[in-house]
Length: 92
Image (cartoon, rainbow, N blue to C red):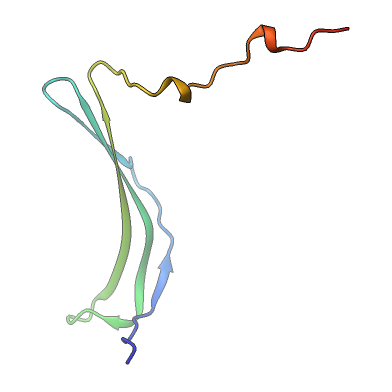
């Protein structure tokens, strides 16, 4: 038997203030936490036991760690460089 489903009305989300919180560790490293609401809604078919609206929200969290040195590394093969002057066509 399929499980009963609860219907929700999709609500628009408006950001108030910043979506990012920044923490500084004692060694100078910064941790940036960014929150995004992917979807939010209010039920059209069910209420909480006290009669208040039932809300549901899906959120995402993105963590970025910026070291004190502000340095990072990637493989040399992934570095995009402009073509060398020798590879350009020469006029005839």
